[in-house]
Amino acid sequence: TTLFRSGPASLYLPALVTWAILGALFRLIFVGVLFTDEALQASSVLSAPFLANVIGCFVFGFIKELSSLKGKALPAIFTVSITSWMCGSLTSFSSWNHDLLLKAFRKQPGPYILSMGIGIACFYSSVIFGFHMARAFLFVERVLCFRACHPRLNEKTFRYDRAVELIQGEEPTIPVHIVSAPTADEHPQSVVDYFVDTVSSSVLVNVILASLVSSGLILAIIFDTRNRAVWIACFFSVVGAFLRYHLSRTNTTVPHFPIGTFTANVIASIISTIAFVISYANGATVPSSFFASDLSAISDLGRAVFVIQQGLCGSLSTFSSFAGEMYTLPIMKSYLYTCVTIVVSQLSCAAILGFYLLDEHKSLA
Image 1 (spheres, one colour):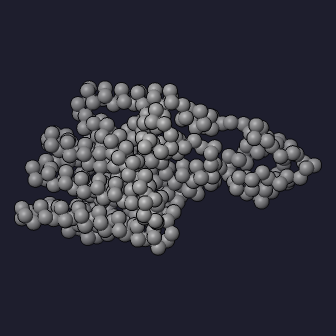
Image 2 (cartoon, helix red, strand yellow; image 1 turned 90 degrees about the vertical axis):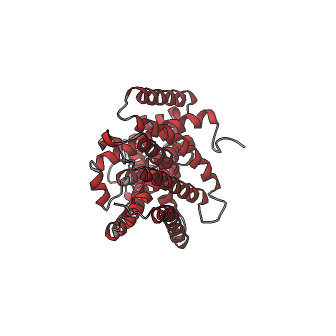
Image 3 (cartoon, rainbow, N blue to C red; image 1 turned 45 degrees about the horizontal axis):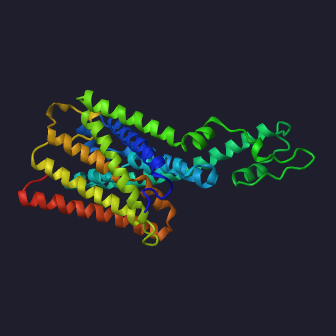
């Protein structure tokens, strides 16, 4: 059994390290940008990872559709790095589920319902918007490339129906007396194409990038004592992304039900809730992002729970893949998959938190 199903570990493992760390770091930054006050977040209809989930779902949809349209022209390592590891770590199902759980136990039915509805609608729409933008991008790219290869082609002879053939991957039907059809060698390679085709597929480049990111992370852990928990969380995101990637290999086991993504999201949500119960039982404060928090009241236990929730669980769970699967599954199967994932995650976490509060005769403030 190979470590990675799409290629050698010498190429994929460094890419996983690089993009999982960057995805988790971007998520924590976006949380700090969206909520500068923990009290504001508790009463908001937007979840803490809302901005990160929206951006991650859009990027996921864009790269997935671009990969589908370009086919082999887009290396598998590039697609997996961005969609599975970067977007998977950038988006977080467990953090979204945890925010919903707290709103439910704080008896905030309005914010609970709105947060769930707005979240699902926005994240799902972001994936679809990414799909559409990928088609628009490829259309413009091919039109510009075609015109660069055929400067004699003017507006009167270049009709829209011929341009549509470009995005469908076909050579346009151009009259012979105007110009001959371009060959593959005549298409100029852009800087982006060069990076995707050459740089992203290079073992040496991926090893260098992983080494630089890992070294920077280690230095930040050593010297940046204020935000040390953030950097440790980014380190644990690699573990979460690795586990999620291997769970995703079971997605085709059950027809029309991605069991791997389902398992990753439910397990991450349960672990996150258990960590919260431990912190709550010991009176420890756990911020959503250290970048926007007062660290004076945060204990070592609070930092440890932060690392587990935002690092390990945040990258083990994913909303980008979840929303993408909602879109690609048959409609009735999609509704079933969505409802089962959310209901199982909410009920299992509610049972854990509810049993603790009932046993201790407590309630969430």
